[in-house]
Image (tube, rainbow, N blue to C red; front, side, top):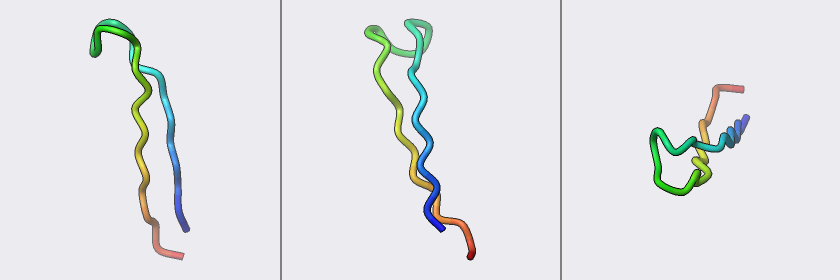
Length: 28
């Protein structure tokens, strides 16, 4: 099972609200 989580980071973390993408592999 592949879980893709996308969340936009505010100026607090990055200067231009970039998008952080994380791909987590979970046991089926």
